[in-house]
Length: 111
Image 1 (tube, rainbow, N blue to C red):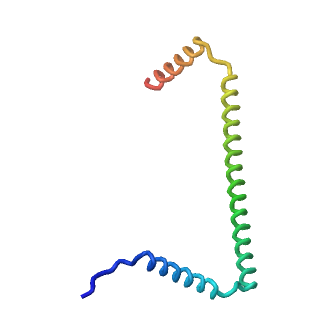
Image 2: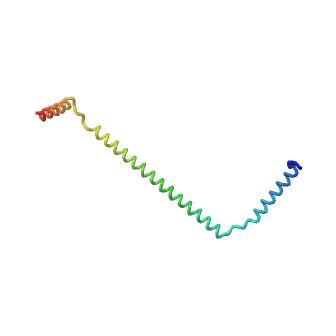
């Protein structure tokens, strides 16, 4: 019974040459690209690219609108804070008088 024989250098070179020739023949046998198919493929790719650009523009516009809304909200809060800071603060005597009035009203309700 014959045992396993490892391929030598010459066998490997011959196998590589055959594989290369087979791949080249397969490549040459490939049919040429139909111009109509090529044009259709290019049109589809251009349509996809245009759609992608439109989506990107819409997303950018949405982000900008949200940012503008946040800026407007922050501006409104800042104006409200400035307006509340501009109100005159009550003095200790006025605060005590208001507290006393609430206390007196509570007492009057209990009677």
